[in-house]
Length: 249
Length: 265
Image 1 (cartoon, helix red, strand yellow):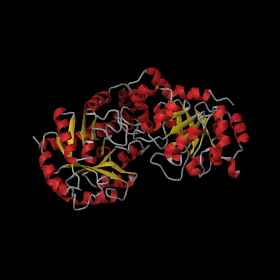
Image 2: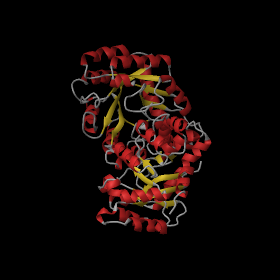
Image 3: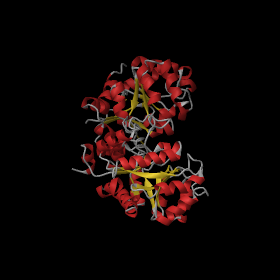
Image 4: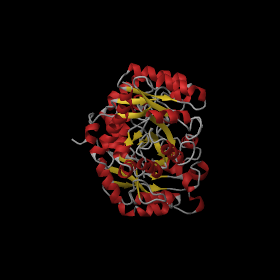
């Protein structure tokens, strides 16, 4: 099973973790331990210090064969970051194919009023936006509002919670073809098989959640799930590769 | 083949899950909640045995839930063991429930949930349970969470000090208060760290083994909440040796179970 991880981070954050991955080299060593070939990565500074600092910390990874950068975005409202035009020029120039947002930590609303232009462009260019569930104000209601207002946005929801949240996310999967879920915290017994049986395998992406989560559980889940090998491989890597290949900058 | 790869290919070593439930639960989609589907899930994941306290015992009428527990234990001997759940909000029922269940074959201990039952674990309504288990060297699985509150690490330390003969499983290992929980397991020979909810934290199993020793870490999943395959992966991908993995997945729970089962022969 080839694995392409949609959600791995490195760097030193505010709070020490039981397992730290301070450098890209440390992250690669852990990916090797787990048998993960590639990862779509972010730097903890982008969430915990500032988006700009985190993005800058990953400059050295340009062209890396295994670690693919994602750029953390914020609205231009306070003129602290890129304009929308500059952002798209930057990610095109840097060959970045996915962005992340941490609206709760960065104190803004991921909605039409604050981020309408940005979200409209991400939708038009099919650039995947990855956001942890916990970063939405009002949690699931925030996700529902975002998808209702931007139905063509490619949203990858990460860290969706370990306690079988299907009653929340299945309606989103059914209604929005560009809504995806990462497997990190997908831990409920029988949940993966049930999801694939009912909704197919196309909307799930393998995510390790490193260095916050232990990737072994999610690898084991996929390896042992009673699903087809085609579904297993799609979730492990092919769905993410397809999404990144769809970006139309 | 190493243990990790053996599990990925459907083999591995025996596994005992010391923290399981049974039946539907109000706020979680649980596709494997029924007894038969749980046993089938155990077969798939390679889990030899589980110790259950049904959801109805914890969040409904405890007496009904305890009856379900005994029925499951009797229907699946050697595969399903049971905890007698005690609800401190109904203290007059405590002695009767303990008398009814605690010496039944396959019922190996007591489960308490001080957070959901809004009762401090060191309060007077739990004292009869503690005294009974202390006298019998019994097994207690307590929900524990954080440092403070009804069953945080501070109160669990009081229990560990006061009742040195209780085999005390810290359910969820005082989630979030890792250093305090690990110190408890290190300081008291009768205290064990239980992995439900905690095991997903990267680096935590290694920390537990390093400080408290792998013989003080017990496998649990809240099954049918969490998938045993996920939790086995958390253990087998941890940076610990295979002896430690086997201790966590099987040996420690086997020892605790056998001690209790021997008293019921």
